[in-house]
Length: 172
Image 1 (cartoon, one colour):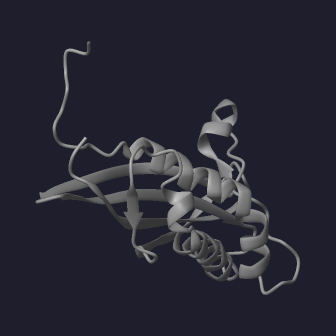
Image 2: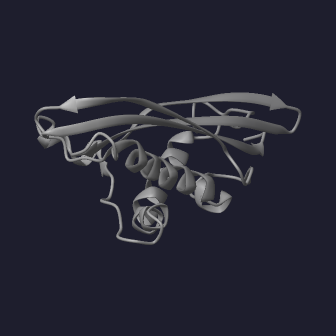
């Protein structure tokens, strides 16, 4: 018999993060092609966890999770979870004047993927009955253009935060 038998439910948001990352990996080629106007596909994101061996020569564009958080509100029979995931990406171009447009295309693709993950995919693997709102709240911040001597060109960083609302039964 377990030592701990909770009466209130707790949502494991680690599964939500894994579902978001799986969705991005599976859909980035199509989203990057779409964001580039259906012309040539953009180079795919390199997830930092897949790029650790070459940090001295980054394989751009990179994408990494830089933060996450949650807020939990127990209301009668329902637990409301606000889940936040923060991403950062570095985009490279040989020309400073084309970099903002290129960076915007990568941000557009990522925003689109974060906005279009369906609730069943977002919540896959979670125990019990869960619900999620169809549309997350998404914010984007763009950094200044910088020079990267190793890559012999210019880089720009952008950050995207997506906030999802999840509901579940309050009782375990």
